[in-house]
Amino acid sequence: MVASEFLDPVLRAMLVSNWGNYPKVEAEVKASSESWKRDWKDMEFIARGLGRSYGDASLFKRILNMDSEEGIMDLSEEGIIHVRSGTSLLEIIQYSLPKGYFLPVTPGTKYVTVGGMIAADVHGKNHHIDGTISNFVEEIEIWTPEKGVVLCSADENSELFNWTCGGMGLTGIIMSAKIRLKRIRTKWIKQQVLKSRSLNQLLDLFESHENSTYSVAWLDSLASGSNFGRGILYLGEHASEDHVAEKMRGLNWSPRKKLNVPFHAPSFLLNSFSNRVFNQLYYSFSSERSLVDLDSFFYPLDKILNWNRAYGKRGFFQYQFVIPSQSGVQGVERVLRKLQKEGISSFLTVLKKLGRGRGYMSFPIEGYTLALDFPVSQSAKRKLNNVDKMVHEMGGRVYLAKDARMEADYLRVGYPEHVAFSSFIQHLPFNSNLAQRLKIK
Ligand SMILES: Cc1cc2nc3c(=O)[nH]c(=O)nc-3n(C[C@H](O)[C@H](O)[C@H](O)COP(=O)(O)OP(=O)(O)OC[C@H]3O[C@@H](n4cnc5c(N)ncnc54)[C@H](O)[C@@H]3O)c2cc1C
Image 1 (cartoon, rainbow, N blue to C red):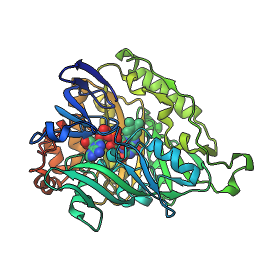
Image 2 (image 1 turned 135 degrees about the horizontal axis):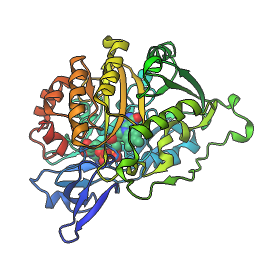
Image 3 (image 1 turned 135 degrees about the vertical axis):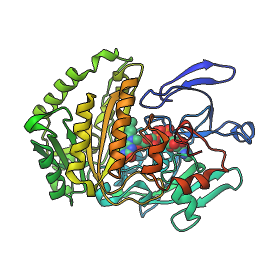
């Protein structure tokens, strides 16, 4: 379990937090193998996977831990994998890669469960081409108290399916799923690394490489003057056998040695000075390797276990929002300048291009999404609230899987679908701190 501390062994009460280590809630926690259906009859609770959402999406006073609900049931010849919902992406990769399959859409960490991935309707570096994971979910089994386990898909019980993908666990307990995997020939990615000196240049590069399957940029959110918005764009394509020397052609997955952050760092370590130094070094010394393995390309942050502890005990906010295409380069520029003016600096800033959204409660809409990290403080909260105002005035929205602090009024503006969603989930016994904070329930 991620960041949980025992409080009371009799009540099984725990202090639980997700990846951002904020907020921490006192919760009664049960595993999916326990008698939760009887014990929590007529009570509200929330499902939790591996706690890799950053904020309070899988937090509540009663938490159902689904990570032990794991196991791969089948991988068909057509590449459709049938898994229990607590199965992690790591397990799927270890099982399916040697057979020549990889995930069609993956977030930036492999330590998430299938249930968590569907509930957040995650996007990857290929959203502009392939959309979110729900495009590849053939069917899901969901449990609700009134109907028991129900099968749903884009064609069958489609309303339940559509609200569940992106529904942040508020529509039912995902028990299992069938996902269409992607055929791959090698475990290598042909990578192209393009440096840009300014924001305009960086966004131009995204546009001129919009046919690349994978694209993501690191952006120096602290650079100013003529370097404002400089960054590095990483493009990727799955390599075929022809691109890879014979001795590198095997599809075996060998986990790499990882570094670990053994305890919470003192919070003064990450300040605007250290952030500036890191960003300068990153820009100057980035690797330009042209062939990288899947693990390094998709999951660079997984190389450091518990990297979230570097932000100290108080934790951090990850602020991910999308600015719609119609606001253009100026939109992204306005928000970055606003962040600089507010004086909050992000250690790591990631920029991605998103393609057309699918509606419902799914986060992506066509445009640019930025993800930034800030240590938790009252002042950061207040300042980000000001940035929210600007993002929403431009028609943007905040990603709920990352959020721990947004005010309910912005959800109303950003997600017009929330009205229909709220009425769909009102009678169901699922609730979370996120749902309460944003007045979805
Ligand atoms: C380093 C890092 C990189 C990331 N990169 C990306 C990215 O590139 N793109 C992206 O989209 N996201 C990204 N994320 C976010 C992450 O993919 C999502 O938050 C995902 O939902 C986490 O899955 P989890 O299993 O840890 O679920 P949790 O965090 O435990 O829960 C997330 C949500 O899923 C619900 N849930 C979990 N299991 C079930 C179930 N069985 N039934 C019903 N509901 C359930 C919970 O109630 C909650 O609302 C990243 C996170 C990290 C830490």
